[in-house]
Length: 455
Image 1 (tube, rainbow, N blue to C red):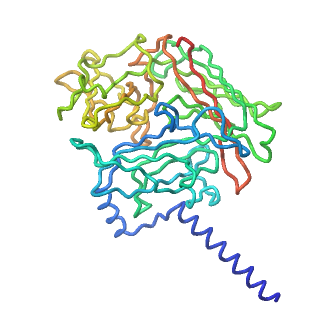
Image 2: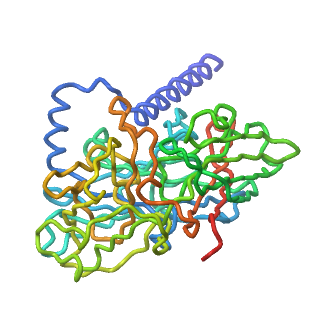
Image 3: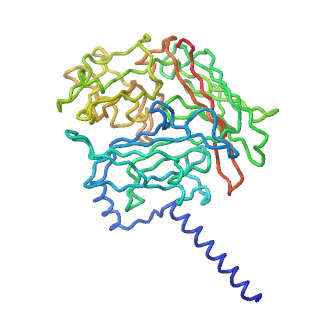
């Protein structure tokens, strides 16, 4: 009997190791893909293409991608929604077969190497609503959307933290079609944000400008023990790929001209404080309402504004803080259009690299959205496909670093101005390392602030 029990325990142990290995392989696919596999993926990539991807609160497209998780079997509270909606358009031959994968990440957006947290049996789902493109639409074939989490359906979100929502080919999970970011919050800390008027020093000018200093205080619950408060991350609304980080490793005050600075005070007497400085006041974003078919008709030609854009100094009208509301458009016009941005520097040339960023490219400068000088018109111009929606955008200048694919000394105030009437919205997240379930980073609080009370 003793020998039989030992063999049984040994078999169970081996089975557990095999299961963990399979889960690990599913979460982190191997890199040694054969040439035949790559050719097959290339052929399929020419058939499947996501034209755009968006994620927002299920209750409102203008709400941030913040998911509230239950705490101690109680519904989530505070900033965010109890469910998120992800939607996108696709070009494909036949009805699309895709899978949604949720990838849990640490505070720095590196996928978590923990098979218990990164469980593909929970974090994958195929429950999409699929609709054919309206008659007359030429730039995509299907519209897909899904809302999660929902009872009885996958994916489910069990752990708080940063997440990448990734759309992959159902038949080849290595083939990533598109991805975006969202935040899952388990509120276990009370947080407050205070925004003060301050100065902003640009890397490209010598004159001090209008700016902000932001202080974020957090008081964690006593239930947070056996772990570590990691830091506070600050995001300008809508700009989910450009956090400012305050923690033990990221502390700097005036070390680099024009760069934001941060200070971090770990938990003292139950409170953690982060301060962010040298933040530009900025201007309201430029508005581009492509749902106005009267102004931007569906003709098949390249669309542009009636007048070229010019540098701004004064406040014009309030934007929607980088997350525009939904605007209805007739089905026959619910397409993508080729749009040309034109910036008029009144015939002047500049040594700076100029990019247009906005709701159509996650506010990230990239080579495909870099403006080029046109000798005939004297404008700086760039064109690309935009979904018919109410977009926000602005021009930013700096020095493009092709080796690291980043814009150095980026400054939007040079072309957009920095009036005191404008306002900016911010979100701050508190990160905590939980040692349970093998250890992982999670978000335990979120705060919101608006840089002016004018509106």
